[in-house]
Length: 91
Image 1 (cartoon, one colour):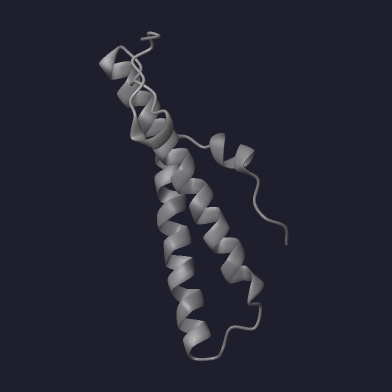
Image 2: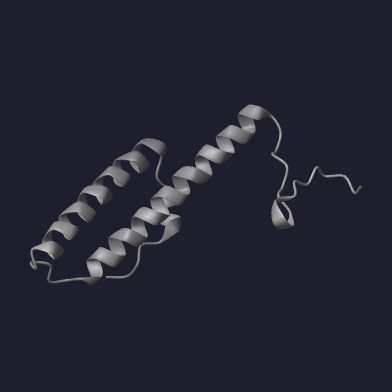
């Protein structure tokens, strides 16, 4: 079983994404329970589930950020080195 592709996750709509996040979190709980009781035979599935959850949460945060930016009507200033905030002009 290969790692899931992020392109497949980006194709999901918001409702499917939320459902998938809940499903993967439940799956991770089951894997942790099996690992604690030494019943987990395919240990790589735990790593795959963690990777998939990270991808799901990344896509969710990307969508939230893009919605926030479109709602604000402008882009937020970029952060340069050492926490300095860039205003877009060359001072």
